[in-house]
Image 1 (spheres, rainbow, N blue to C red):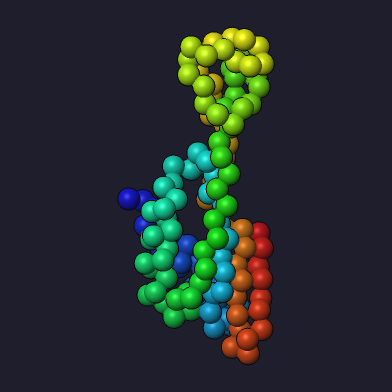
Image 2: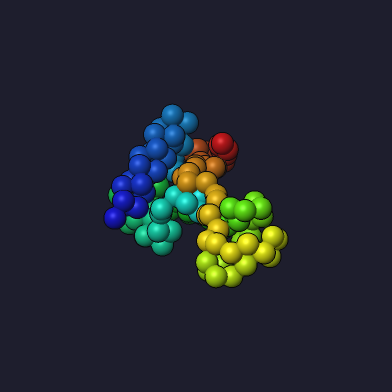
Length: 127
């Protein structure tokens, strides 16, 4: 399960960001998981929740995930739909039959981190 190592890497990054910004805790973290990233979202969330308790600075962190759906491009006309049709169903755009090609990114991106300083002042870092 590589989701656990991805979650560990994220926690390590958050601990480092908190130290660099003299923050007492991570309040919120928002991550984008591309539709073709090969990440099981529930497993990633489980790993994050399990590992965050190991560090006082991340113990109360809330994980927000942005998981856009994949699109499927017709190889004949280029039309992109939000569903994958079977090989024997014609494309609504051109009528050609054939399996559409999945499209979308395969990235795991840290979008935003909200930190709290010792004096309860919030710091927000966005990518």
